[in-house]
Length: 277
Image 1 (cartoon, rainbow, N blue to C red):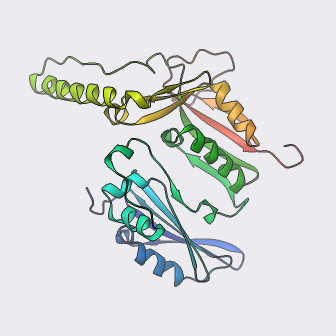
Image 2 (image 1 turned 90 degrees about the horizontal axis):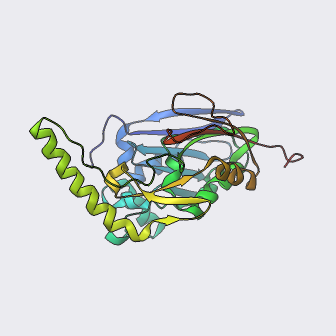
Image 3 (image 1 turned 180 degrees about the vertical axis):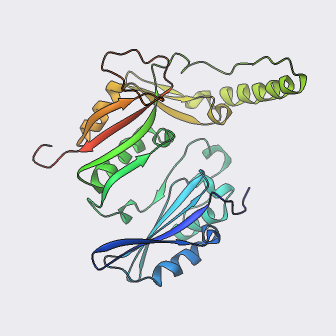
């Protein structure tokens, strides 16, 4: 699918008279990098103009125009296989479109310095988005979150739970009395089994975390799983102070509470002030 959908959007963010403002651009701008750059250049702003284009829940592109300089960031270079906007970004960055064997890992590319130091009060990363990254890129993402958060700014994100009782369970065939549904289940099971075997060499398990291909995307992608203690340690290592962890119903998960029935947890952390870091 490469057509503009109702979930695609593009916005331009600019600063005028010490106040930030935002305007929604036509959704068609989520198809064309040149159109986005022209729109940003036409909007004067103190400290540069920021643009953001999101294509459904597949990927996003962030831009910053300061004078004649244009910085671009793409959240996932593998999106370039299917989406024109992502391909245009790679061409702009002079990065080749990845080969088929490189499509199992989400890889962001571009210039993260688009977002200035201590420029956000709140960062939200839902749907376990941080778990699509490798271990090294995950730590980099946490460091970048610390960099762009103001003192006492909050980072809220969800992440897979390595203690979930089904975390390491492989593909399962689900019975249905409806023959059409059962046939579809069989087809999905075979695809999941093939993906599970194909991605198996890339799976990683350590004392701190695991990279597992799970039911998401029918076992075709690796996701990062970690315990609460590991997440707390990772946050502390970049100057983010753990506040709380919640289950999927919004209930606080206590320090010693059993979380084996919870596939993912929602974390809230705060950037500590320099004097407390």
